Length: 505
Image (cartoon, rainbow, N blue to C red; front, side):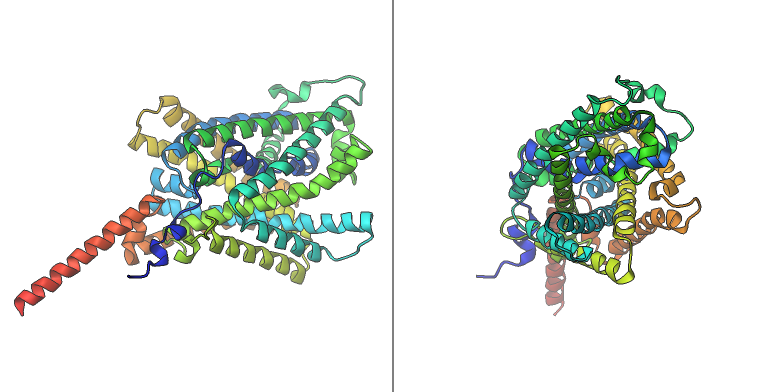
């Protein structure tokens, strides 16, 4: 009996089915977004970088734009369940070369988000261990310890990872809510003002900077379709998980940033720009709650690292399955986890930590902040491209979708997301907290232009050297049928040629 090859094995071509429900997918989203990390780090940074008090309104505005984007996004996800969501959508909505370019941008962006987290985890664990247990070790030791934990957890069943993230995310959200309530009930001026929540608080001067910072805080909300091949009833699970998560995130961010505004009053910007910015959120509730929050800040970082590890692993798996990347990347273990892709992502994390140590980088500023900011910007570019792809896809295959879902919402969100992306580029020095005109503010966003070009060129090369692989781009599991037909056609052609040769003989 012939041995079944890995390429034809069920284990190597499919992720585990029916493992995640709505709450499971939501937990991966919330862990990737890391609400406590954003409210404790990004929100004060928004006040400090912009000097504006309209941060709560900016978060609400961005949430509305992303909600409009999600209308077409989940509609397309219902048609195309694929672990490489951006990749598949852009491939089928715009063009295959554009899809490969987008896929490589996604891989780079999610990797930057994931490995960048070690730059915050290491120093945070270092400080925590020294303050509480008098254990003194370099940040790199703690970063590699966290890396090993994420590597191991990234290889277990996705539903088990989801349960772990669920526990951590639930506790994290409860603590953020408690801190928010404490801040709102202790206003600086003795009264609560909702002015900073109103859209009228946004001013043209500084609008680009505050929107750019706010939009990066939502990075991770788009992950639901990445788990569509592992979800139960994906046509229901993915939309519900996306919209509920986005709503929860928007409320948490707006409320927490509003609480900071209320609690610190006229001094909110000055405090954010001072040495106490890192503890602004925790200082609203001194005592036991603050201690718990600081501890959960560490678990928030670890949960985000695991969530992004799983996301980038599935993108690389989807590309390996369709032979855009080496086919070994498209193999899974018996538990349905993309082991090879997970291993490669872990290797990249180890390389990043090692480089930071060898080159003497500031782990928080250059690894975490620059890496996370640049990764988030890459995701924003993909949101804009995907929104345009939704329009292109539904123009070709409208089906029974309403005009709002297939044309109006994605068309509006495309325009708005392009404006947001431009605002980020225009204020990239603000995002990085570097002087205007700095080389880093030009080079880092340019990484994605180079990456996209490489992807487009590679797709065109595939079209020439592996036409069957090119035809399967963006088709997911359906790509296997394309390759089967291609192989069968080649076999028929070979047999016909052999028969003609025999006839001539």
